[in-house]
Length: 394
Image (cartoon, rainbow, N blue to C red):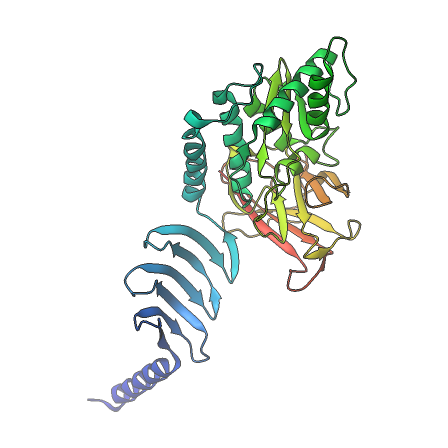
């Protein structure tokens, strides 16, 4: 055997020894002695490789993920207590990009619909003979729950018969007056009782004209980006109010009402901030090019200075890299009136008719991805000083 070959063998063995010394697998155990976690770590003790975790008993999967130099990097799958996949996240260098896979978003929306439709046989009735049929009202609740589910909110909003009764009277008074009015006058021939209900619904509700049906009305309220509403997005923000627990719908001719100011939910989903569109995969069925983007900050986590906040949107390539500078906007503003639990919103909308240097034109289309970046924040505690999220439309 030649000396150069022996020399190369010695180098290879030495490198292998270094590799073995610099990487190992850490195993953690449950109190019952079953395996809880197994993960590769580098020489500094940072997770660096595949991680597998199990529920107590050591047989059912709890998590599978990939790490690189101490950061989550790749697909992270979380399993329920029966060992079935529950969430599939995508992480890039320690940053959560997609909270759910596209397939999970589609399946989640379908599940929301199935859950609500299964309630049709026991749907509560308001006693108002003019109220929407259970079949029509239930479709509107499906749509509302889907929007809330997409935004990570507690979405199990229910119907309160009293709200439906009032909302129907509200829709009928708007039809009688021929206009939208949150504080309608009493038409001739109306009883005091019916007028009281109508006033309550109009004062506590979202109003719409020209929707045609209640599902379309929910979509209109979530869009909310016409010239008269884009400054506040008040209808949208009421439907996304974290503490909403119940609602009720009414419709008369071209006029629709939802009782939207309910605040009965005692255990809202914790949120440092809320956005629409939300982070992750967003279906084209629930967002269009004309929709404004907004973010609202939880006052428990941020001191809000609307003038200091910045909101930029960047187009991303298929590798989720920014393409050029921030997109030009056709609306850029803030609203500090209390619609819902969060008393403010930062509102922007990209301009779909022009593009800046190195940018593709703005389009809400299948496969298009954008990054929203909000700065100029004053966080409390551990809330981030800059908020960013990626949206991919499908």
